[in-house]
Amino acid sequence: PPVTAPIAPSQGGMGLGFFIARTLLERTGAKVSVGTGAPAKGQPGGALVSVRWARQALEVTASAMDGGGT
Image 1: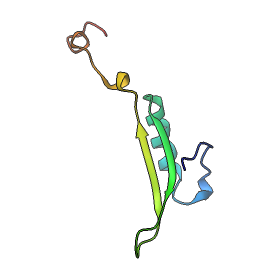
Image 2 (image 1 turned 180 degrees about the vertical axis):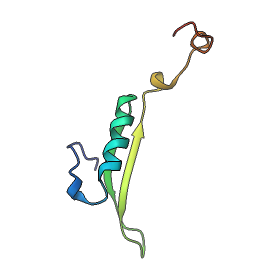
Image 3 (image 1 turned 30 degrees about the vertical axis):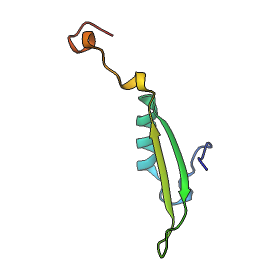
């Protein structure tokens, strides 16, 4: 399940780099979800990270491309 609470650096592998990346992504309007993946056969489990943006946040209009705003 996605983690909705702030992630503590003590959770291993979720240190300063993840904090910086998450902050920058969220400033662009992204929704960042983090969870734990189930182990595959003979493999350890791992982190699952999902990054999603609203389509409107990524679309660029023709007038914006010409410098005319959105």
